[in-house]
Length: 131
Image (cartoon, rainbow, N blue to C red; front, side):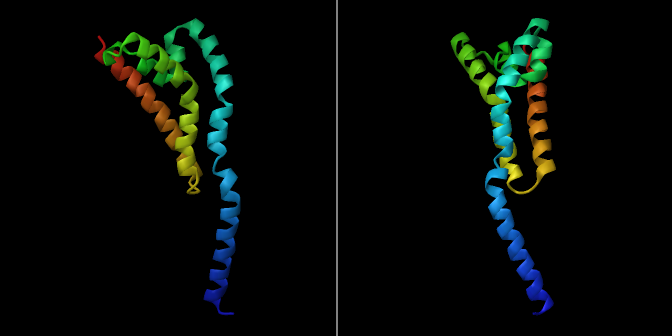
C-alpha cells in the first residue's frame, strides 16, 4: 500500500467516525440551551427583585424588546417579551449548533457569547435612544 493510499484510508475512517458521532454531539448546544431554560427562569425571578439591571444581564433581549425607543404596542411587547424569555437560550443553542457541527467548538462558544453581548449592546443603545 502506498503512503498516499494509507493517508486516504485514515481520512475515510476519520470521516466515518465524525459522521457517526456528529449526529447527536452536534445537537449538544441546542440541548443545553433547552435544558437551561427552567434554571434561568428561576434565576430571573430572583434577579427581578433587585431591579432591571441584573435582570438585563441575564435576559438582554427581553429588555431590548421592552424598550420604549422601539414604539411597539403594549400588547405586542408583553407577549413578545414573554416568548423571548423562553426562547433566548434555545436560540443561542441553535446558533451555536450551526457552528458546532463544523467542529469549531471554541468558535461556537464565542458566537454564543457574541449574541448575548450584542443583546447587552442593544439594551444600552436603546436606553440611550429612548431618552
